[in-house]
Length: 323
Ligand SMILES: [Zn+2]
Image (cartoon, rainbow, N blue to C red; front, side):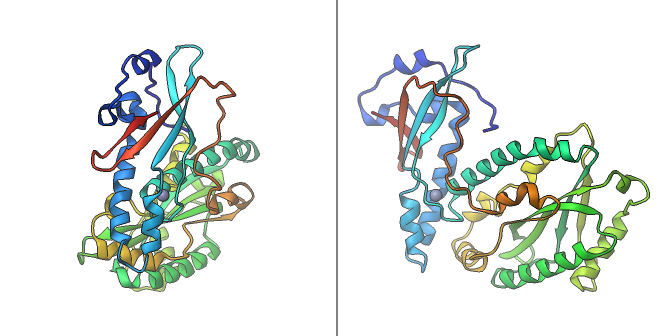
């Protein structure tokens, strides 16, 4: 995992035993970098309550069992002597819009990308990268599915244009709540494109040209908003990739409004979150699949210096240590 580690020191854990359940140490007190668990599980509680009593009540039941209990392994850093917590086991519900699972999934994808990228950079040392955001006008949330189908058709025409510069691409779908009109949906694509170095010479496309290509591919008569950013050679590709593989719906939008959220669930059912094309298919294809587990590969070796266990305390909105 790539999260910055604050580290924990073991003596502070063992010297503060509290027998009463409510006063046991919170996960957030022991490991600052694991404080995010509280936020995600709290949002899962909200989503669970939205699904309750709807046609998705089975999702509600599954989410209610998700990540209730976390088993962390203590991993020492041989240089600093500081310990950190490494998730060892937990049960996840795998419901698509469960905030905990969505967060874990994006971590797994990122970790996978980290492993795959070095080979790609060896095979294409001169490649340059673009980050392109393609948008359309906001649609009613009830038209989201239809709109995405139409956008995907547009993208496929776009990628077949002669001037389309990418040798390979990864495309993800993001949906945010539209402000105008209120309660609408703002679907857009984030596309990471691998282009030849000549893109920055003879093959360069102006902003106006990009917009015209996207407009033509969508077959609309307005100028759709489109943003192109080039990655500087010294910038980190993994950082950009992380931007592309982020959540398809941000958590604050998931929990903003029950009706919008339920309709979103209906509309996105069985739609694809990630698509990889061109030469990148050979490298990044597995990112199109749901990760097998949401725990994460452990590359910290076999060192096992004990475990700490935490349970979700719904009323306190915190994970607390249990025996
Ligand atoms: Zn879950």
